[in-house]
Image 1: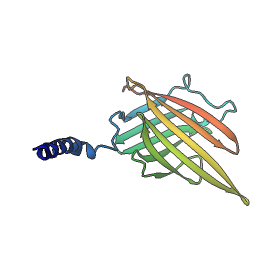
Image 2: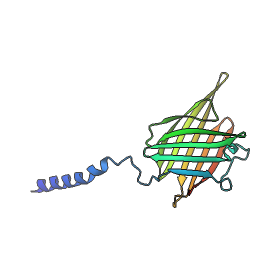
Image 3: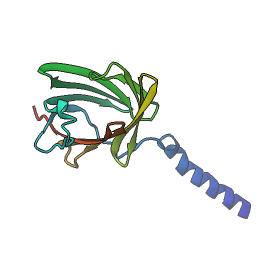
Image 4: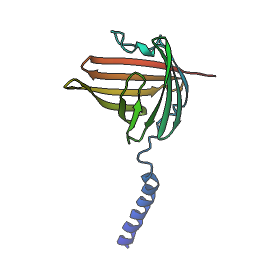
Length: 173
Protein backbone atom coordinates (compact mmCIF):
# COMPACT_ATOMS: atom_id res chain seq x y z
CA UNK A 1 0.00 0.00 0.00
CA UNK A 2 2.90 2.35 0.71
CA UNK A 3 4.12 1.88 -2.88
CA UNK A 4 0.65 2.69 -4.25
CA UNK A 5 0.51 5.84 -2.12
CA UNK A 6 3.89 6.99 -3.49
CA UNK A 7 2.74 6.29 -7.03
CA UNK A 8 -0.51 8.24 -6.47
CA UNK A 9 1.42 11.21 -5.05
CA UNK A 10 3.84 11.10 -8.00
CA UNK A 11 0.94 11.14 -10.50
CA UNK A 12 -0.70 14.01 -8.59
CA UNK A 13 2.51 16.08 -8.71
CA UNK A 14 2.99 15.26 -12.40
CA UNK A 15 -0.59 16.36 -13.15
CA UNK A 16 0.22 19.75 -11.58
CA UNK A 17 3.46 20.19 -13.52
CA UNK A 18 2.32 19.19 -17.01
CA UNK A 19 0.05 22.25 -17.61
CA UNK A 20 2.91 24.54 -16.56
CA UNK A 21 5.52 22.90 -18.80
CA UNK A 22 4.54 24.78 -21.96
CA UNK A 23 4.51 28.11 -20.14
CA UNK A 24 8.08 28.19 -18.83
CA UNK A 25 9.25 30.79 -21.38
CA UNK A 26 6.20 33.02 -21.17
CA UNK A 27 6.61 35.98 -18.85
CA UNK A 28 3.14 36.73 -17.50
CA UNK A 29 4.35 40.19 -16.49
CA UNK A 30 5.04 41.16 -20.10
CA UNK A 31 2.95 44.25 -20.95
CA UNK A 32 1.34 44.83 -24.33
CA UNK A 33 3.34 47.66 -25.91
CA UNK A 34 0.92 48.13 -28.83
CA UNK A 35 -0.12 51.66 -29.68
CA UNK A 36 1.10 55.02 -30.87
CA UNK A 37 3.78 56.64 -28.70
CA UNK A 38 4.95 60.26 -28.91
CA UNK A 39 8.33 61.40 -27.56
CA UNK A 40 8.17 63.72 -24.55
CA UNK A 41 11.42 65.71 -24.79
CA UNK A 42 10.81 67.42 -21.43
CA UNK A 43 11.11 64.05 -19.64
CA UNK A 44 13.77 62.54 -21.90
CA UNK A 45 17.51 62.72 -21.20
CA UNK A 46 19.96 63.10 -24.06
CA UNK A 47 23.73 62.72 -23.98
CA UNK A 48 25.65 65.78 -22.73
CA UNK A 49 27.50 65.96 -26.08
CA UNK A 50 24.24 66.21 -27.99
CA UNK A 51 24.30 62.60 -29.11
CA UNK A 52 20.77 61.27 -29.42
CA UNK A 53 19.37 64.63 -30.47
CA UNK A 54 18.27 63.09 -33.78
CA UNK A 55 15.39 61.60 -31.79
CA UNK A 56 14.01 65.05 -30.78
CA UNK A 57 10.84 64.57 -32.84
CA UNK A 58 9.97 60.86 -32.74
CA UNK A 59 6.78 58.83 -32.99
CA UNK A 60 6.59 55.07 -32.47
CA UNK A 61 3.75 52.91 -33.77
CA UNK A 62 4.04 49.52 -32.12
CA UNK A 63 2.22 46.32 -33.01
CA UNK A 64 2.84 43.71 -30.31
CA UNK A 65 1.73 40.12 -30.72
CA UNK A 66 3.94 37.86 -28.59
CA UNK A 67 6.62 36.95 -29.40
CA UNK A 68 6.74 39.47 -32.27
CA UNK A 69 7.10 43.20 -31.75
CA UNK A 70 6.98 45.48 -34.80
CA UNK A 71 7.88 49.13 -34.50
CA UNK A 72 7.53 51.85 -37.10
CA UNK A 73 9.78 54.65 -35.84
CA UNK A 74 9.32 58.01 -37.55
CA UNK A 75 11.57 60.96 -36.74
CA UNK A 76 12.76 64.21 -38.21
CA UNK A 77 16.50 64.30 -38.80
CA UNK A 78 18.36 67.12 -40.55
CA UNK A 79 15.04 68.64 -41.56
CA UNK A 80 13.81 65.46 -43.23
CA UNK A 81 11.25 62.98 -41.99
CA UNK A 82 12.58 59.44 -41.93
CA UNK A 83 10.93 56.17 -41.00
CA UNK A 84 12.23 52.74 -40.25
CA UNK A 85 10.47 49.49 -39.55
CA UNK A 86 12.00 47.32 -36.85
CA UNK A 87 11.06 43.78 -35.81
CA UNK A 88 12.00 42.18 -32.50
CA UNK A 89 11.31 38.68 -31.19
CA UNK A 90 10.87 38.58 -27.44
CA UNK A 91 11.82 34.90 -27.18
CA UNK A 92 15.54 35.58 -27.71
CA UNK A 93 15.85 33.99 -31.18
CA UNK A 94 17.56 37.15 -32.48
CA UNK A 95 16.71 39.63 -35.19
CA UNK A 96 18.38 41.82 -37.80
CA UNK A 97 17.19 45.36 -38.52
CA UNK A 98 18.34 48.05 -40.94
CA UNK A 99 18.63 51.34 -39.08
CA UNK A 100 17.97 54.65 -40.81
CA UNK A 101 21.19 56.24 -39.48
CA UNK A 102 23.48 53.50 -40.75
CA UNK A 103 24.23 51.53 -43.88
CA UNK A 104 24.73 48.34 -41.90
CA UNK A 105 22.36 45.92 -40.28
CA UNK A 106 22.09 45.67 -36.52
CA UNK A 107 21.75 42.18 -35.07
CA UNK A 108 20.14 42.01 -31.65
CA UNK A 109 18.79 39.49 -29.17
CA UNK A 110 15.68 40.49 -27.30
CA UNK A 111 14.15 39.02 -24.14
CA UNK A 112 11.80 39.89 -21.33
CA UNK A 113 13.65 40.61 -18.09
CA UNK A 114 11.48 41.29 -15.04
CA UNK A 115 8.67 42.80 -17.11
CA UNK A 116 11.01 44.96 -19.23
CA UNK A 117 11.91 44.21 -22.84
CA UNK A 118 15.70 44.21 -23.27
CA UNK A 119 17.68 44.09 -26.53
CA UNK A 120 21.45 43.59 -26.55
CA UNK A 121 23.98 43.76 -29.35
CA UNK A 122 27.62 43.98 -30.32
CA UNK A 123 28.27 45.83 -33.55
CA UNK A 124 31.54 45.66 -35.46
CA UNK A 125 32.61 48.51 -37.74
CA UNK A 126 35.51 48.13 -40.13
CA UNK A 127 37.51 51.33 -40.50
CA UNK A 128 40.70 50.80 -42.45
CA UNK A 129 42.49 47.86 -40.87
CA UNK A 130 40.75 48.32 -37.52
CA UNK A 131 37.69 46.56 -36.18
CA UNK A 132 35.77 48.78 -33.80
CA UNK A 133 33.26 47.18 -31.48
CA UNK A 134 30.20 48.81 -29.99
CA UNK A 135 28.19 47.12 -27.26
CA UNK A 136 24.63 48.20 -26.78
CA UNK A 137 21.81 47.64 -24.37
CA UNK A 138 18.25 48.90 -24.92
CA UNK A 139 15.61 48.54 -22.17
CA UNK A 140 11.91 49.26 -22.77
CA UNK A 141 9.85 49.79 -19.62
CA UNK A 142 6.17 50.65 -19.41
CA UNK A 143 4.62 52.50 -16.48
CA UNK A 144 2.12 50.65 -14.30
CA UNK A 145 -0.78 52.61 -15.80
CA UNK A 146 0.35 51.82 -19.39
CA UNK A 147 0.57 55.49 -20.42
CA UNK A 148 4.35 55.98 -20.45
CA UNK A 149 7.03 53.98 -22.24
CA UNK A 150 10.64 54.70 -21.27
CA UNK A 151 13.45 53.41 -23.47
CA UNK A 152 16.96 53.61 -22.04
CA UNK A 153 20.04 53.10 -24.15
CA UNK A 154 23.53 52.30 -22.93
CA UNK A 155 26.03 52.23 -25.77
CA UNK A 156 29.77 51.84 -25.26
CA UNK A 157 32.49 51.96 -27.86
CA UNK A 158 35.31 54.06 -29.24
CA UNK A 159 33.27 57.26 -28.70
CA UNK A 160 32.91 56.45 -25.01
CA UNK A 161 29.74 55.67 -23.12
CA UNK A 162 26.46 57.07 -24.40
CA UNK A 163 23.47 57.03 -22.05
CA UNK A 164 20.06 58.10 -23.33
CA UNK A 165 16.57 57.90 -21.91
CA UNK A 166 13.68 58.49 -24.27
CA UNK A 167 10.27 58.89 -22.63
CA UNK A 168 7.17 58.37 -24.76
CA UNK A 169 3.54 59.12 -23.92
CA UNK A 170 0.79 56.87 -25.28
CA UNK A 171 -1.34 58.74 -27.82
CA UNK A 172 -4.88 58.60 -26.45
CA UNK A 173 -6.53 59.21 -29.86
